[in-house]
View 1 (cartoon, helix red, strand yellow):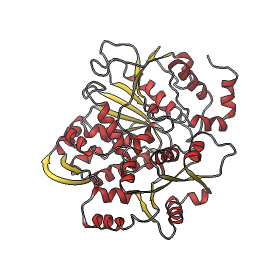
View 2 (tube, rainbow, N blue to C red):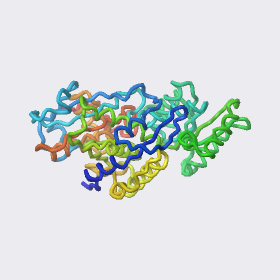
View 3 (cartoon, helix red, strand yellow):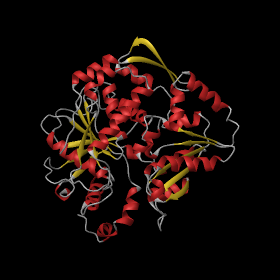
View 4 (tube, helix red, strand yellow):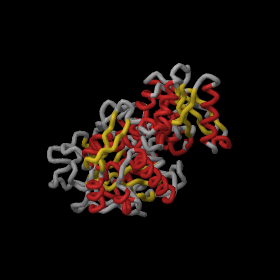
Length: 449
């Protein structure tokens, strides 16, 4: 299992000491830098003092008990492991009583945040949607694959707030609409784009937005909204003044990048970390290994930043699914750089070691080309569902479940507590059932235990 470096405790302490205060004015989420030093908790509290999509950051936490701590072949030997889901674990003494010797790991049930929106998508949009509303946007344009959970999340979120969404989906319309594709079609306005055109996403998004705007509408990238709302320099003020003259236009269109993998997406994850680190939940003292599946890697980076900002002894382990280690490192560096630039963090002198990585990027237990499902994995998902009531999917969350079992075995003797973030993926199972008919037909044949 490949593991990349994680910042030392001394670095975490240095970062906490190095934070300079930022006083946030939330009329348009404007930031001013003062000379009063803040510790990490104060910084995070001010950073998160804004309007959110989710009314509260709460998440249910369950404890998955294992019949054995030995997991020789995760994902292939689940029939040899029994699970039991403790839906109301005790947090009276923090996360776990030290006397509890039963092998287990904890699972943050972000899959329960919304019936149609994946948990990680809800967290990414948590800080984005209010900014879109604050700038009187009427239409949102974004893109994704045919079964894009991001596109479906944007469509549902926009509909709930009276906004129109326009979703550019890669490839051809499937014969049968199902899963995220069905939700995108019901809640949004879907256009299928040939792969050759989709390859140039920026041009594709801009062209479609301009078409929707026509001669009287206006088009803006979400990053420009963010920059304007976070700045008080002349350029930003000029932008806002110019934007005010567009308020009479019938259409004001914002372009959101694929996956919402921009810096504002990190805020919702930092908010989650702040919630989880409360003393009556996971606490701030006990070492944790927080496990998450990684598509773009944005969720993992947000969790890592939250842990660093709050000075927590937490290590974020992200299971690489869609990119190489170099690709994830590049994404991590870009997001860290954007976070420092946008939110005025004057902590460059503390980032020498952190630039090596906030996250442990690890290979999946059984690597494969992204999106592929291996034989036996659908049955593994069924085995987990029947014994715990928790649905994982073979592309994303099964990978995090497997890694949680492996880390639980490694940390069995008084090591760190293992906590998995369940990012969702329920609707993705419907699309997979069409693609992998033979694997799912085994379920119909009653081959489960």
